[in-house]
Length: 278
Image 1 (spheres, rainbow, N blue to C red):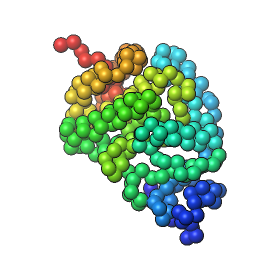
Image 2: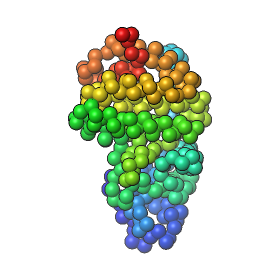
Image 3: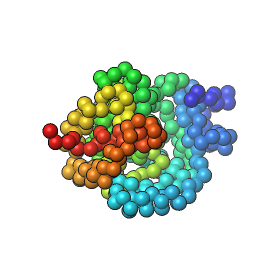
């Protein structure tokens, strides 16, 4: 997204809080980028509140499948989502993790510092994996392993992400992987081990198909198993139970006959499932 220029009267000297207060009622979309003279910022505006229907449905699905990782994490939208994101960003930043700095906050919006250079996009890991899949196993496996290590940093810091999909992991100019999108807080609703297992399942679901398309899925399974062996017993237990209850996915076709989403799910299961005995 290209950054919009603010009104000429605005500069960093006017203050980020004043800019947020003045620009918030003028912004139409929920998220917009702006260029100030001290860099690029993002203004996130509170959207409408979300209904609870989808959370009840997800809760029913979790109960029917006995998959604890599917237990819903409420994201009520509106002001609640803004407050949650501000709190989570400050907490993650205090733990030494690369997240956008909160420059200013109001009940209806946040002003965040861009993680990249002003005027330059920060590619997501999803972008990198998609491009690398066409270049062969080594090319796609390298960023995938870096994403796994980025999750390791989060978990070693004693916390979790919100939705650990590859699209929410971004490459900063110095090569460090940063984290975005924190409108919900899984740890407020679920035990930490379950939250961290959710992170891994989200990452597997959003990345495994690229590994398959790049011819790296078999090699990645070995890396996954070795890496998983270093996780806590509680996280390993949740993932093992989840993989067992998702075993029906192995009967799905690996091609696109049933759509891209189910193709992703099948690839994720193939990454997570225990290797067959030799």
